Length: 283
Image (cartoon, rainbow, N blue to C red; front, side):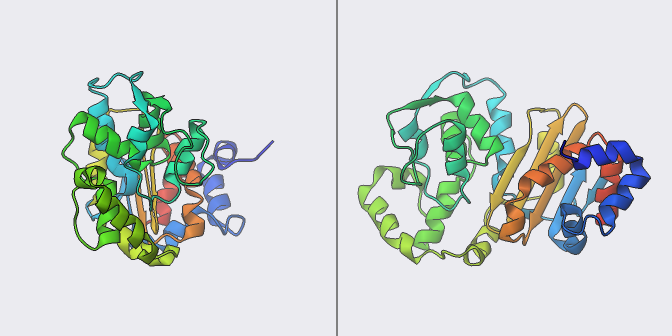
């Protein structure tokens, strides 16, 4: 049986778990990363613990809490069919593999590593909301924002600004074949390395952990996860409470371990020992 951190917290209690996590037995974990990067982290556990709660940080896909709240109002039926091509027209790239993860989750074949093989196929609106929240698929977020008429910045617009060096309306990009060709031609000039894209990601939408916590409060529905180069964000809202972690200056290896951070955040909402470790690591 895999001995998970949750099992350790439950088996050892608060003091014992803190020793296990903070000691030499766990030199390579998110708590260690947090201790070393306190100035790059903002955290809110509603009413229980906060660290740099009002400092602005990049939000990555955590901005989708606005989309989720609007969707929860019932203006779009979960079983509404959406053509894959209609959704994927908003996929311009630079999403850290989120769209490919979304295609895999929905069982859609993607032999070119970019978009689905069959743009004429369909998925449901509920499925798009799911991959938007669970995998940080920005194309799904942009589709939903347009469908709901939300006045929020689009991720596709952020990518177009990076590629073209100027602001461009997404609607124009969708309707103008010459502009799409220009974007395609300039894609080769976009930084390819993870480090090269971090400075761009720092300049995307920002917000505070306190603001996101308020937006999440009272809307249970599983974690909202976002990853961009150098940015990892996690928001969790359950019956036990709401928690938000915003991290920047995260290297590629740690970004790939975002699932571990999600589990720690969820555990901390129900296990005092885990919450204490967040407090100790960031104090």
